[in-house]
Image 1 (tube, rainbow, N blue to C red):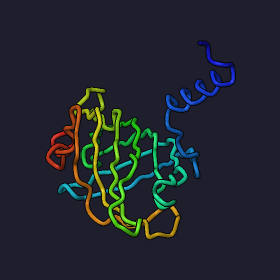
Image 2 (spheres, one colour):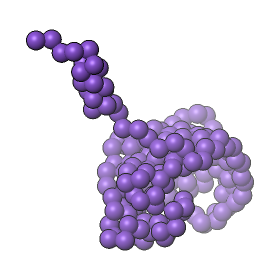
Image 3 (cartoon, rainbow, N blue to C red):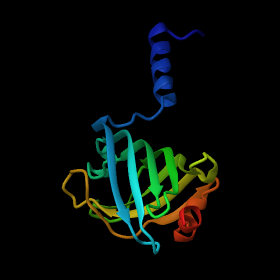
Length: 190
């Protein structure tokens, strides 16, 4: 027996809804930005001058109803260029980066609906160090996932309070920049 055309349309509509991808909340804020900065620091036993610029697209999405309107997800698709120079000898290195940082859906922790755990993921090539000849000295690439505990303050507005330091959940790909420090800067610029 063949179904009537109206029931065929109803079955097709239900099937389309079942197969549809979840709808993401519309951006509450969408900001295409550029920045530049410069300065010096002396954390490694010698002065290092830094000149930097970058930009990207940052978005805050409307709160998902499943969070009671208390958690607004953030994402940032960014690029940057930073030049580190030792003014005593003129040697310099350059750090470039291009990646995306975003927050994953949260999980409610407290009965009052104000405290959540959530994860962030940064993916792409956020860190490449090159010397003045263009030789790659260090490169981070892949993805890093961190977990946070967050109090939304129950005010229905973006922002709130981090309740703990981030916890590393997963790191995929090489990330030598995580253990890099003054010894590398001294070797490259000293």
